[in-house]
Image 1: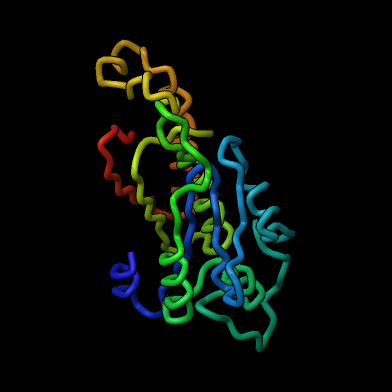
Image 2: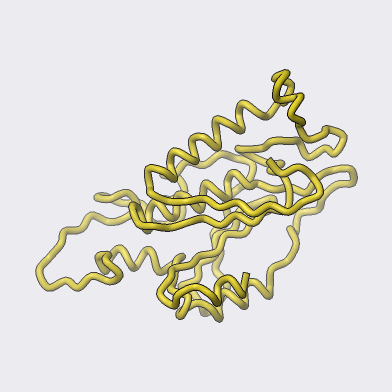
Length: 217
């Protein structure tokens, strides 16, 4: 990840979301100490609830206070200064946050919540993607942006779950899909379809990189 960030243009905006049992959105603009917004991984959360918890809800454009373009007001990166105030809490140019981001990556730990014997690791992938999509929709709507999801296994918690945490339940096969015998399939398709439509409407892209011994999707 450090190498990938180092290859980005200095003005490229970056943010960081980590997840396991819960979702953690890191506030890169608060470099004095590690400041994190936590979202419950087992419960579906709407875009409006995400923005409200992040303090980005308000009048006018979704996620921002109502504002008007005034003569003499200089825009920053094509955005009104009031907009950049919200953006710069979570999304910063690489040149301004590379050190902070590197420190956060150094301090990353495995999920603190214990995994019982015979269970899969808890991954609330759906909520994490929801939070990332909601953040981009509020901060950079209609502007080219992408979510890069690095996955180490299937979603096992909350919306978008495809298999239970119990290892005795096998991950679905193509035969299960053909026979409509995959219990989580329909709900997962509905959830990810809704997420895809949201990203398309915002003009954003989702890239998924998955590496696991267990089936991921």
